[in-house]
Amino acid sequence: MTARLIKGTEIRDEILKELKAEVDKIKQEHGVVPGLVTILVGENPASVSYVTSKIKTAKDLGYKEVQDNQPEDISEGDLLSLIDKYNKDDSIHGILVQLPLPKHIDEKKVLNAVDPDKDVDGFHPVNVGRLMIGGSEVKFLPCTPAGIQELIVRSGVEIEGAEVVVVGRSNIVGKPIANILLQKAPGANATVTVAHTRTKDLAYHCKRADILIVAAGVPGLVKPEWIKPGACVIDVGVNRVGEKISEKTGKKIAILKGDVDFDEAKEIAGSITPVPGGVGPMTITMLMRNTLNSLKYRLGIA
Ligand code: NAD
Image (tube, rainbow, N blue to C red; front, side, top):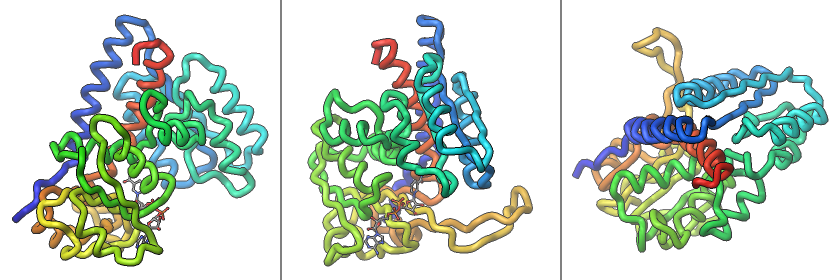
């Protein structure tokens, strides 16, 4: 059997189209657009590249985009004051502080200073708590896990009642996706197991999964024989395993591999995400959705 490919790029384009239509409608009816500020401290090349993609997507959707670049040596106090300024700015609905921050700045303190109602990354303890409580409490889902849920839902895989196994318990992927899928809500209602480095028999748990979500950061961790025939496999892992010359640009680019042995796994799974091009494209899309939702909460139309 060859699995159906869950194409993150196609699902991303579909969602961005929906968001653009909503942004245009809100602009027409309420005269406002979502406002997103991206705060970048220093010039870490990976961070610059992430922020550039976020800004481009926001602009393409017609958002107000404020790019606030700060020098590497900004003091913690000045950064906190900056966040306070955007917390009070009514034209800004989402505040994104690009991580990592320089060592002299306490990352936790900075992230906790963001108004939870503008925390479009969904990592503020208030939003983590809202997700735990569930229902109408939930405001912003963390972007990568929210993207995973969308991939599963939009590819027509039944989540309700499914055995979901999540490999990985990080605060940015494993724990939140487990919480999202066990909610009493549409696109959830799953029976969820979370496996991690101390799990006794990882193969046993993976083999039970109707939906297997792997976010371990270990290339090829999940073996093809651990996959239940017909299962939906979401490979979150992005591992640099070497370099090659791009045919398009002639420049050196990283060779990326997921946490699952894709070539063999696709012969057993019912559906599977590729790496790259699976989960990756969804993260920025969900950031855009959160920013739009933030404006909708403000307008009372969410
Ligand atoms: P992390 O290192 O914070 O967490 C990894 C988790 O996997 C840990 O909880 C650990 O217990 C578990 N784990 C590690 N090795 C294991 C093993 N051998 N057996 C069982 N469990 C094991 O990583 P993270 O931030 O959650 O990211 C995981 C992967 O997902 C990385 O490859 C990362 O690059 C990728 N990622 C991709 C996106 C995206 O595509 N947008 C976003 C976030 C993370």
